[in-house]
Image (cartoon, rainbow, N blue to C red; front, side, top):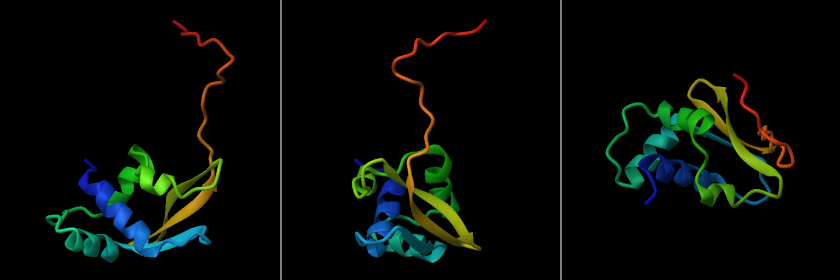
Length: 105
């Protein structure tokens, strides 16, 4: 079952999304409205929803599935209480699969 944060961020994303977009603006009030619409008890720190997906968690699969190959949605700040989903070329650094990994003492 999806977490409260997953349900809220999906609701905000899909309320604003269409396939031609590479940037989607949203604000803190939309997070509160999503909680209300989804009948989720008020989340005291709405900013933590955004922070979680910026720094701790991957966005839900339903959102990830909207991206073209080799792209991902990221969330960036866009002003006070304003945020933006931005379509970006994947930039995660991963170890090469053809190299052995070594631990250094």
